[in-house]
Each structure stands twice: as C-alpha cells, then as structure tokens.
Length: 388
Image 1 (cartoon, rainbow, N blue to C red):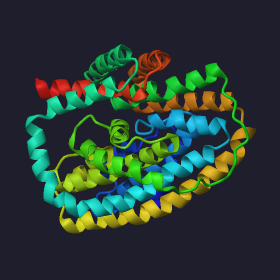
Image 2 (cartoon, helix red, strand yellow; image 1 turned 180 degrees about the vertical axis):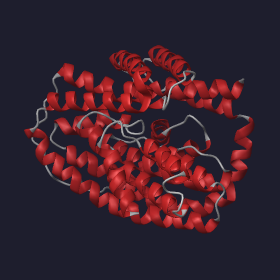
Image 3 (spheres, helix red, strand yellow; image 1 turned 135 degrees about the vertical axis):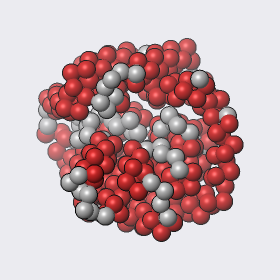
Image 4 (cartoon, rainbow, N blue to C red; image 1 turned 90 degrees about the vertical axis):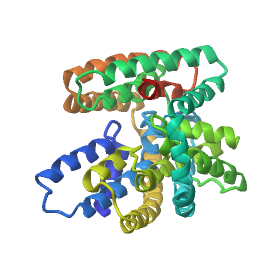
C-alpha cells in the first residue's frame, strides 16, 4: 500500500505518466517477473496508487495547466485562483472533495448492492441512447452550442481514426495532445505570470454539501456508462447541484475520487471495467470475492486519508516555490517530457498522433468552450460501437 502511494504520487505529479501505464506494465510483469507474488499484493498496490493519483494529479493541473483526462475542468477555476495567489486553496478544495468522497463511497457501497445490478441491466438495452442523451446535455449546456457540437464531432472523428490505428497505448498521445500539450503551448504563448502564493486554508462551508451531493449522484453513472469520464460526470453533477467556483473544485475532487473508487465496486457487482485500475485488477484476479472487495475498500479508506495530507504538503511545497520558477521554461520542460513519454510508449506514430491531437486541442480551446466537449474522442467511438 505504501509503495502504491509512492507510485501514485509520481504518476500524479508527472504529466503524461498515467496509472493506466503502470497498471498495464504490472499485468505484463505478473506473468513473468512477479509470477511468484500473490496477486492480492498487486491489487493492493494498484488500488493505493489509483486513489493517491486522484488526489495528487490536481497539483500539475492547477500549478502547470497540464491536466490529466480527469482533471481538465480544474484548469479554469484553478488557474483563476492561482493568478490571485490562491493556488494552495484551490488544491485544498479539490483534496477536501476527494477526502469527503472516500467516506461517501463507503456510505453508498451497501446501497449499491441493492440497486446497481438492476439499473445496469436496464441500461444495457438502451446504452447508446443514454450516451447520446448525455452528450446532447453536455453540448446544450454550452453558450456556443454549434461550436460545442463541432468540437464533439471533430474530436470524435479523431478518436475513431486513432483507435483504429495499429498503435500501442493509443489513448496516451490522443489525450495528452488534446488536454495536456495543447494547454501548455497556450500558456507559453500567453506568457502566464504567477503571483506570490498565499498558504491559507479556505473555510469549509455548508454550501459544499451541495456539490458533494451532485458528485454522489453523478459519479456512479461514470462506472456504468462506457466512455463517460470524471469530467462529464462533474458537469452532470454541477447541473444537479449548481455551485460557485470553490464549490466546483470540491465537486471535481469528489467526482474524480468517487469515479475511481466506485469502479472497483462496479467491477465486483456488474463485472465491468470503467477505469485502467479496474482493468488491471480484472486481469490479475478476474471475478473476486466480497472479502477482496472489503480489503479494497479498507485500502481506499487508509490511502485516501494519507493522500489528503500528502497532497496538502506537496501543494504547500510547490506554492512556495512556483513564483521562483521560470513558468515558461517549466512549461517547455514539461512539454519535452510529454513528447519523450509518448515516443517511449507509442513510438514515432504516437508522435504524429500527438502532433495532430495537440493542434486539434489548441483549435478547440480557441473556440472558448468547455474542454470536456473534447471527450467526444471517446464518447463518439463508444456510441458508434454500441449502435453498430
């Protein structure tokens, strides 16, 4: 578990290093080098790494503007607070949401045993139409509806093309380009200046109950609907519980952790994998017993509490030093690191995909709509798969 927390911190802090990559590597090694090790240890490692990642990955998202696919929505409210010298507060709010989500997960798991299987059996028959409805809601919520629809279709076409290539880890260059390198290039172009950061904790207010409720209702949908990520679940949660900028960061933190945690429960209840960590666990042990689910929930609880305090320590460290760093230079270094990671895992073809997805991401950002519409790159292929 402690090793998982360490690796989850590394994957959270370094843009482009996703837990999915570590999970795939572990599954491959379990056949050879780790064959003598009980798969239970690997499961504990993966769960601890995944939960830690959901807390820590808000740090590069807010301080560098280089989000993971689950934290792209934090850029706008997070950067607004960062530019006001409140980057630490932004990360505190997302971490608070994640910590609350751990206890919400333990609360809803017993209820899930009673209703999730029945709900999922109904959803299976109407899956593509539900995904179409969710996509339509996300597009209709935009002020620039035609631009949102165009971005959804454009990135959907890109996703279809990339997923049909003979490419290792196709999602790495696709999502890194759309949500990572494109944002970094925009920040370099705009010459972002970071003011001195205040290390102060925001007050925990009663109004934060509303975004937590939104996360609680929307997050299980992401575990039952393929192609629907934390970003879309957060948008749906925000429609259920309208909130302000601070509340939205709480909502994002809670949704990110709840989606990951609930994916383990969904794997047990409906045998479906909706996250890379759940895929890795399924590959290692397949159908598992309720005792293993209980072990996973205990690891989630302990890891979540440790990760909350670890994230605050790391956030304080970066907040004190971010103003002493050359932000443009740091963005260039991060951009170079992303290109190296893509080259290692996806080869030269991956670099071509990264270039096209980066250019697409820059264009979509320039249209002034929510970046979550770019998740059409996964939603549209999933809808077409279920329809045909």
